[in-house]
Length: 279
Image (tube, one colour):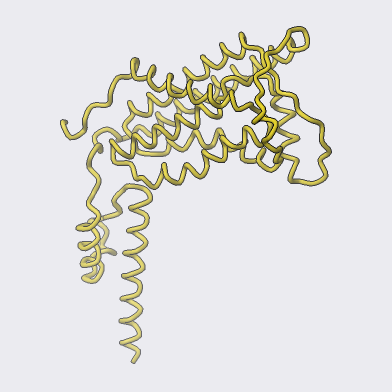
């Protein structure tokens, strides 16, 4: 009886490990097969892994492109973030100082008035920068990530030119904060005066982040898991720009246009990623 119980336990552990490794392989796009590890050489596990490897083959489509470049992607991402934050803050102070002495353009639509203020969406608004970091964590070809990073920089350049020459300001209605649910909105309004509006960088850059992950998935073998689930982050971020009353609808449309333009422009500088199958 004891021997049967141990055998049943062993079968359960083998099944559990196979399911665990299969899930991790699907999520990360990497193989977790370690032929040098003696722990995984038991007959039961060997059989399990042989079946696992036959159904989920190793991903070798662009392995020659991804060695030792994660640190480089992170460094580039940090530099892009610094450039963006500095440029945005400089333009915000400049626009806030001159807004009282110039006539700002009116781009609000009836649709903007119909959209309600939902203070809780301010917390989602702050997830914008973390959302842009996700592509840096994926094993995509370096030139593809470089195109993404360059697109972010170009979008900041275009946006700053628009901020400087297209004076816009969104008027925030006064409200009384009574609990923690509106504390995020109070913090947001203290950090962002609502004078850098058109185009919306939230719209343009989340579009770029989603685009690079879709391209990495369809052309370079990165798991679909990443861009599908990232939509559950990016779509609420875009919605938060309206529901937190930080942008007009026109700002978002202009932001999407800037995202498309900068993605195309970056291709001129970086060039197409070579076909891995041809290497």
